[in-house]
Image (tube, rainbow, N blue to C red; front, side, top):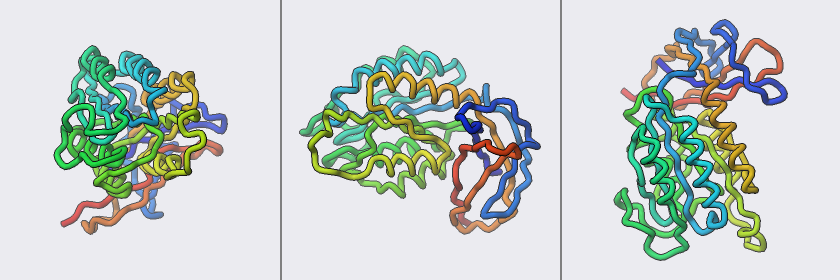
Length: 285
């Protein structure tokens, strides 16, 4: 069974919460698939990771990020849900492992602090991730592989970052493939401090990086260039998590060749847009 979480919006971007199984069409590599399982995912347990960029570019915005992230956790996490907190800069560190205790999550969010260089704020949690820069790709890879891989139900990563990676051991493709292999949806809040970046030499394109991580996994990118944008970004994610559909199908292509299979989900209503992951990697024999 391949599971696909989908969000549907109208032309104005309003969420559509009341569709039925018969409203959806799903294809894999262009071949129609029979949707065998369907549900509206309002109560299914959620496993959530909050990944915070603590490199120097986030210094002015970090305080607001912390307050809004804590408000989001208080709003979204229920007793049957689990969440963890991780930060990344010169290293990747797990500040709080999976828990449903909101107070512990809030404390971990408060523990994030900016690292402008040197040897890192605290000893790294994951071995071999310690050399120079902003290890965004490593953080996504490790969150998916080490924490979310064996979890069931809905799995989501929220990235708070400008999208620029420096020094990761893993590549963007490797991080994305691990997220896809573990059925993780990546939401990116692109936190860009214009005052920090003004006059600096152009660097890697954070927009394109976050678009690949999010859109290919069924999430979205929300740009936050002002402090007030952060509250709206978290609220948008919270609303989407309450308005998901789960579609399950058994692929007609039974080859166990490890190949990437493209998924496309459509609804019958004209003008509706579906947000869902763009594919998965088949198992190998």
